[in-house]
Image (tube, rainbow, N blue to C red; front, side, top):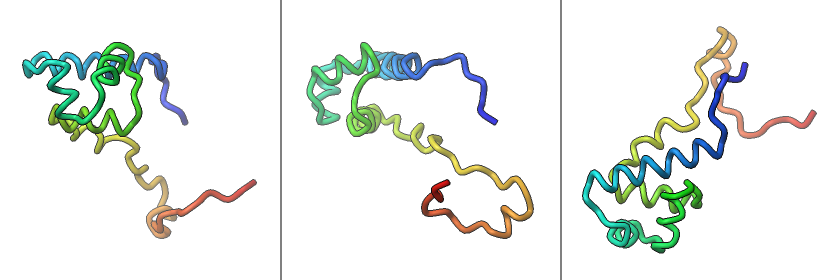
Length: 99
């Protein structure tokens, strides 16, 4: 069953950019300084803060520069076992079969 969400992917992206900007401001770091620490172009950082759009690599670099990388650990968590058979056959799958 899929979780019900009232947030679109674009809204989620924009929120991440805004939260990164807010953290940067709380840490009293300029955009130029954060871009330098993260190793990204200042235009990339500005676009990310304004829209949330950036490559995953750049988002991770910015998160590390802001010391906020721990949030990435919660992405894509493993599903807990649903049945006893799931526990018995707890071998991780490598690929999905074609139907």
